[in-house]
Length: 201
Ligand code: DC
Image (cartoon, rainbow, N blue to C red):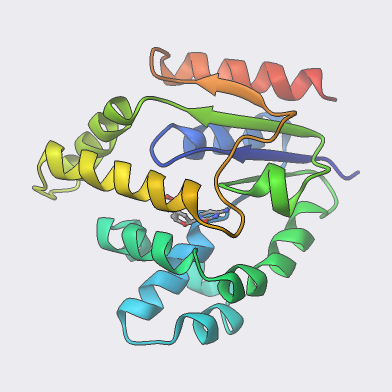
């Protein structure tokens, strides 16, 4: 059985948690496609060429806690602008999306470019302030003493870069279900997503 759920949206809107919970609810596999760009970004920070890093990416490279840092996120957003980097990562995402047993992919361009025929598309968003507050709390919890204002500035800069790039910009697909999590608990957001997926089955 093939069933693809595409979940897009900006950083810290809750799409990671929603994607994991939706995948668990339906027994689908989950791919956080941001990790692909983060893994390339991390290699570039270590001195690699971005296109070569993308072309030689190994799935084992994705399983690394150091990809969760703020610096890697910013670099991921920068390498994601390069068309050859994006092209190198398409095949892996396609084969994941069409695997037997169902798949949830989350990212920025899943419903628009990677899986335009996904059975269900969600666009998960929240206000920049709300997302910066969540991301700031998460970073503080990990001992990172970055200020809220800096996190907000970085969220806004990353949104701008991700949504204004020429290649596969972050945008809601016309047929995506919009979920604004600004005033929702995570449980409410997950419930809204599960309802939307069930409606598409
Ligand atoms: O989802 P994330 O914060 O881990 O993503 C990191 C960066 O990777 C994001 O700022 C833009 C890029 N990205 C992308 O261009 N396309 C995707 N499908 C996923 C992530």
